Amino acid sequence: MGVENFYDFHRHASITSPMSLVISALAFLVLLSVLVIIHELGHYLMARKAKVVVEEFGFGLPPRALTLFHSGATHFTLNWIPFGGFIRMKGDNLADEHERRRSGTFAGASIPARILILIAGVVMNFLFAILLFAIGFSAGRWIPTYLTYEDMQAAAVKGVIHMEPTVLIEGVVAGGAAEKAGVPSPSIIKTIDKTAVTSPEQVAPLLAGKGRVALTLLTGTGFTEEVRLAVSVKAGRMGVEIRAYPKDLSAPVRGLPAALALSVREVGVVTVQTVLGMEQLIVSLVSRATVPEGITGIVGIAELTHLSVQQGFMTYLRLVALLSLSLAVLNILPLPALDGGRLIFVLYEAVRRRPASVRVETTTNFVGFLVLIGLILIITYHDILRFFL
Image 1 (tube, rainbow, N blue to C red):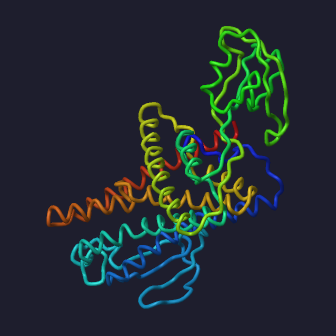
Image 2: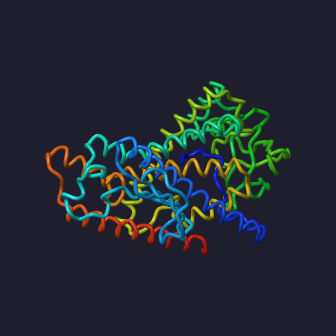
Image 3: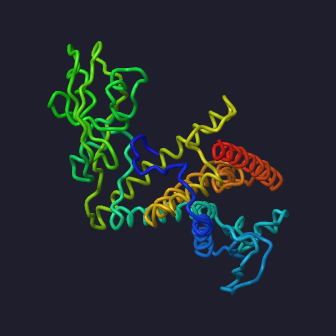
């Protein structure tokens, strides 16, 4: 997520009641299950289009509890582990190369058909995210993701968002002049010696050559309380940490075309940030054996789900959209056991004019699966440490 995302979740919000925990747990299961099932639905629809037989579409994970209904050759099943879903295509579990390539099997389909089947799940997750963002940017009047304060200001000039540019005091230096004068933190600098302040660049010139200045500050909830203070200045400093801050940030009512355009932009921005985050994760694990701040796993997602449920349905909806994008990006990466990894084997076959051996593909996917599980466990371990520290 960007530097200036002002809808961030507060990680240490209090748990309100046992009932809220139950609701959050259900919301968590629904969130991940819906995203996985939408992903598998993409594979299913494209497989049917390519005349590949889908033997089972499972809701939840095995063992199977019961068969819900049949559609053609597909058994739609309900499974005992109430999490996610899967599809099983004809020939998936066969080791014999000849049997795997019979008519109606995944391996027996043309290379273009197999490529489309593999990327269809990712496409569905992207489309689902675009739909949710379009709803949010119209009905929810969401603020788009901006990576810099300058991008946010440019959007405000265009009327995409509304904001009042201000300067935030986010810290007071211990023992400094501002602390001695009782400057509250956080607070917004409204004026310095009656001159309106709207950017951090104005502050240094207004302090230069002065021994004392009169500040008008906005503090309290929503920065609605006005405070006037006199503060000593030494060498052009008064002992505060400041940054640009968008006060009264809001969005106008948007029509569907504008909301769709913003949602496509949002998907692009967040996708790039997700890829960069994964790159940061790999570099951090290899070089320092640590998980960087901001990377989260199942425990962290569960906590974010709880917090988003407390903050309302539209906040929860935004989390669903963001995780749908994350699932899409993760699956398309060229890692064994994921769609991107399987895609590599199909592309290998297209280039070499012959498939990789079943043993190599199976072994690679199995090792990749173990690595993926290990990565999930490492991230989850760090999630738990952060949760209790």
